[in-house]
Length: 314
Image (cartoon, rainbow, N blue to C red; front, side):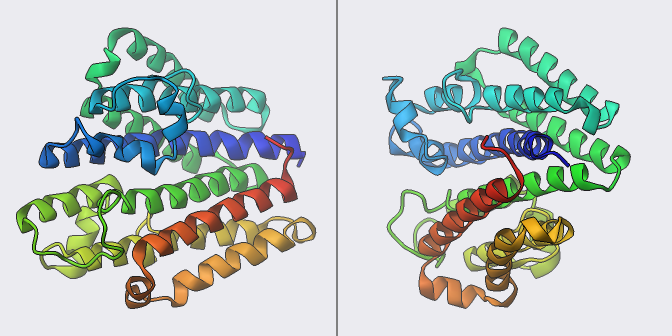
């Protein structure tokens, strides 16, 4: 398959997953802001820090209020990872490879783009809320369902899945950092601070990765910070855990031509080994923030190796 086609398919799925992930980050941050009552101070900047968009937001010269942050991350035309630009980039990449995806996949992406244009005219960016975030997630879910139901299981399908799981793993690591993004402790240990507030914080983090029901089914106990970290990092059955994403990425890379995939295979195998054989105690001893920072660097290395092995510079 041409590297150009592989690149468009890979980035089509990454951008759509990124749009959904941005909606998830903003959704959980909105929930936490309601608890903290700090959305007009440092707390409002949490999603900016998580998505590493400090420089771009500073260039807008806007006050750091929750409303301005949401408007920037959802609607800004200059920020490359805003939901608006992610949806537009998804469509541009899909249009470039219409012959390599099914008509249903293209129609879903095109319909999403058209509907987004209508929403951009009817929604006040400063009043963006949960309903819009849910719509973004639903459109992404619909695309994945259509892809699963209609796409032939050949190389184009594999590159779509690879982009999805690399982007998703990166996002889960960032969302896991939401709870302690502005706090000093370098672990997920409980503190004596308002435990009721802590319960709702942890519930919001679990909901952001659709893991609340899975948590209750697994532990059948009160929500505990240590277990939240454990399920989001190590659970092999949770579709948004780091372990699950890397299991899927490993399977996809192993299915691609061996002559091109030596370096990506080595990198993904090293990442996956840490997740398969690591424990939450080791993570907390090492430091959760430090562990997640290392994981995000590994995701950059993996993404760069995939680009170098299979694709044109994007």
